[in-house]
Amino acid sequence: MENRSVVAENKPSPGGSAADEFERESVPESRLKGLRSYIGMFAGEHAAGTEFAIGPLFVAHGVTAFDVLVGLLLGNFMAVLSWRFLCAPIAVRVRQTMYYQLERICGVRLVTVYNLANGLMFCFLAGAMIAVSATAVGIPFKMKMPGLNDWLPNSIGWIVVVLVVGLVISIVAARGYDAVARFANIASPWMVLVFLACGIAALPRLGIHSPADFWPVAKSVVWTGVPIEGQAQYSFWHVFCFAWFCNLAMHVGMADLSIFRYARKASYGFASAAGMYVGHYMAWISAALLFAVQLQADPSNTTVAPGPMAVGIAGWAGAACVIIAGWTTANPTIYRAGLAFQILFRNWSRFRVTLIAGAVATFGAMFPALVMKLLDFVALYGLILMPMGTVIFLDYWVLPKLRLTSFYAERTGVATNWAAAAAWILTLGFCLALLLLGGIEKFFLFIPGWFIAAALYIAGSMIIQKRAYRRIEP
Image (cartoon, rainbow, N blue to C red; front, side):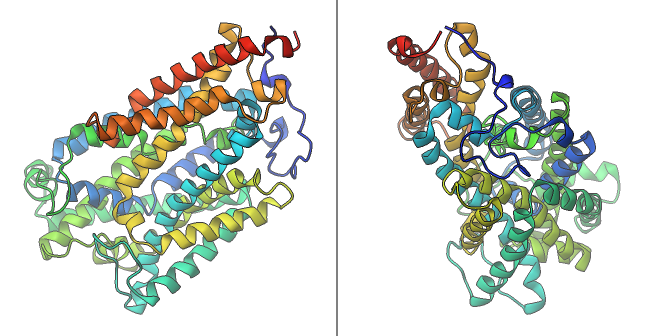
């Protein structure tokens, strides 16, 4: 049985989309991007508005200073390795979007269902970023900010501001990858400096006037190990695992195949460190310091509203940082969602589909729970999308070594590859059982989930391909 390499499969499928974004064909050599493009995109995307929310949520959940500083250091390192060694190597060999690759592996019916779930998850994640920007835009209008326990919109002003912010972000995302990358490269250097400035400016307000003051104050004032009332207690392992797989859908889940397909080399995966250690380390710590200043001034003010927090420390430069930070993260996220929805609307332009994704994201942003429960949501969406990333990884690297056929749906013409369907659905079922019956928290389900998905896909492929052997051309 021949195992054909995807590298040779460069022809577009029937009904292929516009060539400017190569949704259904490999990216040509002439359109590859340099390392600078990826450093700028990662720094801009991950030093973002949501960092102003995630940093304070660690404080609210009572982590200690050691948990944050060491847990984030190691967890982010694991995330960088995941981008470099799981996602980027396949991306630069195949040079196709994750969605098109899944169609070739899983079949049109299964990938349609998956892309709907994938696109919706990306929309809701982008919605959280739109909401973060809205907290800054609404400051001049004296808009009432959502509270830590708010789920529904709390005012008409909030809805109007979210609509305006969402419209602008959606239009930028709909212009395509080049516009998204250009926006990130322009905004990220200034934005990163504002994050750093906010953290430094918060230090004296907390009583930190020298390096020797930092650790005692960090333990007793910022990350005290005591959660805010009504919030669950988190540990070092919560921080470590969250830092590793808060972007699980992008690296292990392979969504960033769509981004790295433009990379010249797989080593560009290390560019993710610009996002992890500037955004998911420095920015989370800076945001936590801002929240600590807010709690010190008024212990009853537990509202996680990035706009007012940044304004309190950095003035209107802080507000501008929150607005732009939300844009730079929401732009590529809505872009990814538009690619996911493309398979559902084959005859529609990518611009139009991306605008629809932006509209869904904007609707989700109206609900403050997307921000206030962001840690829980990120853990959930990564877990839902992860099994299909496992399928892509195994299909490319492992199935050929087992003398099994890669890209099974394309080779056989089936509409549903039941090996992939079983790997996705049964893995989520097993993880749900581990959560409800086994007592394993959602933050830790990814690790057993990956191996469950791998075992199911390999076993399912062996069974299905053995039965269909005579129908696969030698």
